[in-house]
Length: 222
Image: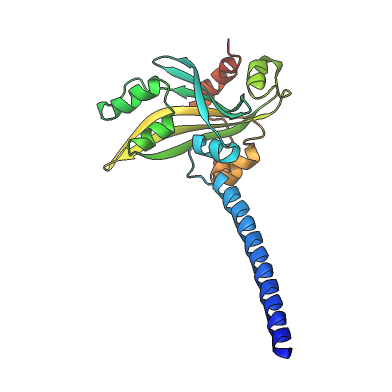
């Protein structure tokens, strides 16, 4: 009888220990998952498209305007058939395109995502920062706010950089890109967490002054 009682107590103890450690293990996994996700979103190695998909679960791009010199794109996430702009991107194409990446350029001209296209073709990518800042709220940007989910006029973070590609010991500057972000997606403070060099590029320099002057005009979507 005593042996049966001892066995029963032993089984209860084992069951309790298993449930306790299992619960603790699940909690640790949950915490680790949250940490990895948060750290991943702030990784400077992510493409913008990858970061949007990681944070919101989906990503797509719609080219709003495209010619030989300029491309304006809406990078958005979708939820319940509702599209929300996460990045409004203005791309300045080069005057000439090297034949080495002409195939990639053609795909981009046809609407392909720039970073994803070059990555799919085996290119290394480097973003060389030019400017970090904020665009003040304005009623002139009603179209942008509407694309961003009918948000109220808001301060929007902007990041301007030169997009370089590398392969087989060759490096090319491809385009200059200005990205304007939905305030729920990226703020200037978030950009500072992603890019260690942010504070070195907060000043508007003559080299990009003309481009920055054109951005508010393009944001009106006229």
